[in-house]
Image 1 (cartoon, helix red, strand yellow):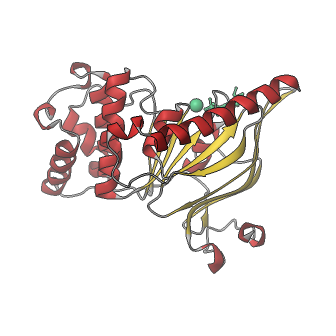
Image 2 (cartoon, protein in one colour; image 1 turned 90 degrees about the vertical axis):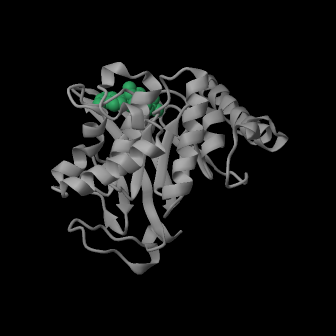
Image 3 (cartoon, helix red, strand yellow; image 1 turned 60 degrees about the horizontal axis):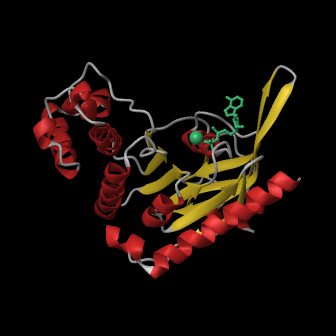
Length: 278
Ligand SMILES: Nc1ncnc2c1ncn2[C@@H]1O[C@H](COP(=O)(O)OP(=O)(O)O)[C@@H](O)[C@H]1O
Ligand SMILES: [Mg+2]
């Protein structure tokens, strides 16, 4: 495995050329949380390899360490063992190359929709007309042009989440890290958001790491799925989703889709049975 040869790098200098093809590489990651005498192994020996422009989902039961893994990719937390490498550099903290979208709505309530989307652009001190251009473009993509001057409290959950996605995309991150962003939405809105997310990805092609415990959602969105089991979280399978590039909601009723979903469901069910017998 290529990963074994990677040297420890604390300076952020480029690593060996053989990892150049991976956008995101996590190698043999362990994460142990300690508080007082109690220690919890949240993640054990997790390795993932994501290519540039991939849409990858990580699926697994609640508590299997999905958020922990995503936080480490974001540089908000660090592994107890193993390396996380993005663009051939060890992750040592958060960066503008990575945008995040969480399950809970994280919009600034005192700012209009438009100003929320412009937030990162203002920090970057982009010229005002450029900020406006970018905000308009993403308002159009998320279908909320009419709500540019509205405040978050005037929006539904799905609309707020669309603004959060637009805000992340407006900064042109190379990697979009999403932690159950549609987890709090009703089923219909959730489906619409999945469709929109896939359409956005087709237009913009960011590398997406999307966390969910919803297998149906993972199969619909991803080209590759890492399936994790609980206690401690391990990757039990990597599934390549060979479904049409352009996804339509009707796809969910096709035998191909149902088959992949069932395979993952069965896998998680048997992993859970094994864990209960231990
Ligand atoms: N800051 C923390 N301190 C201690 N334990 C934590 C912390 N964050 C998460 N955990 C534990 O790590 C495990 C994985 O949590 P998490 O990554 O949130 O799982 P998931 O997102 O898959 O539901 C859980 O057992 C959780 O209780
Ligand atoms: Mg979580």
